[in-house]
Image: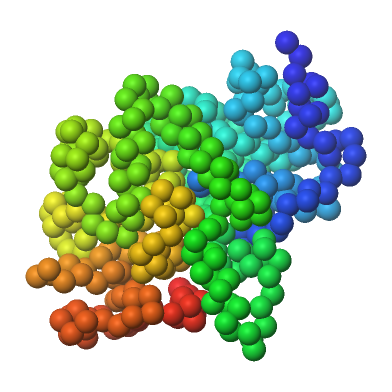
Length: 387
């Protein structure tokens, strides 16, 4: 089977000018552009439909300003037409089209590589034997589970998150003035409710979120792991959204669902692998961290609110703060029935949306041995939170 026609469909810049109409997300494009010069494979991860493909195509459009179009190949590896072909066969067909030698530098963009069983080995072979720069995306954290250590020392990871508040304003084409702080507050509440899934922010079509979650559950969890009890998976996800920002007891969830704690633990891990949820351990020694329940946060507050309704704004606000500091790998503090939200690198953060700490918790916060302490209670606090 000749795949030439399929490759031309994926790469319109081979025949005409390419100007994608996607909105720029500069904070990610700057990172991806910076890595053009180094040899590492760039693994772009993140929730399905969060904008990974758009970023790759925006990067390609910028790369075309300095690189001839024939030296750039993009393919989506979940394409049915490409399913019978190994990556090296796709690459051979591409080189044949343009009569490219192995010495000529080429830029490869592989979308949804997680569908390929031996992807780590295939990427390693390309990295080691050919003059290539590789960007590869995946909506599953399985790409990070490189059990054979094929990509050790050869790859960098860039996780794409849902829109932050500044990107939300950009996608909504909103430009509030400093003299109109009341508008900023209104927009922020809208952001809290809608979250940051790019297409949903643009269309406000709530059915989009429903279809997105259904797709992730069926494609990335049920089909991939051969799960028969689909009802259980959906119920667990609803419970996880309800527990967003709270401690998650596996045994209690198991009791509610009528299954074993091991089953719940495994299913929760599936949702982590799809980037739908994140967990935060309790601070302490290793045995304390392992025994204590984790706190759960949703990757997107819009998805959370779709299942729970837009209520408990304090929990939603805390979720947004977590997403902003996620890369700092925070833990939560718990002692004698009192909890403080986040601790990392001698920094203690307590989140109270438009409210204050109660007396016992205030004393716990005051006396906790941290060099830097922050109470995040307002939109201004959130916007000024930088690390």
